[in-house]
Length: 198
Image (cartoon, rainbow, N blue to C red; front, side):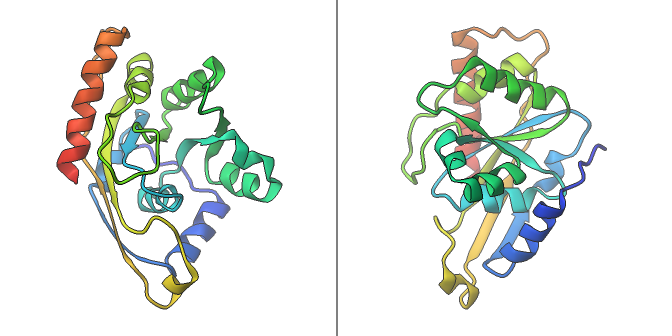
């Protein structure tokens, strides 16, 4: 089994977050193995990337973050140290996509929110995650987050219950096509898997 060593920042963040919520995690064993993986999850607010990353430890979940976050040096530092890297969500560059593929091929875990928006509504998943998985020949781990949209000071005194579930792996065949039709088919499959976890 390949386990990455979390940075000191990630370990300190885990201690801090544990004061703000009571977390139940299931299926974390699905993250193990030598090969890189793409974790796909619902996205309800700015807090869920933190809680999903917390739940994935000892693995670090790398993730694309909107480039505007890096305009603020303090926020940018936190996001970068937490495994984030900038992307223009309106026009994602080829370089950013290649970076995700490279991370997966290096055996890393990458977190992607395929619906591309922070909402509890059921929105058709975008096919970006599937396209990346097909190019990287990556294993996909569907996940589900249930908890608050934000982290608030009141949570120090009334710690909310947070549930994170990592589902069964979805394999990408080595000879799989990378065209639009294949991406749409895989997108439907991972969307169904995410819905089943909910």
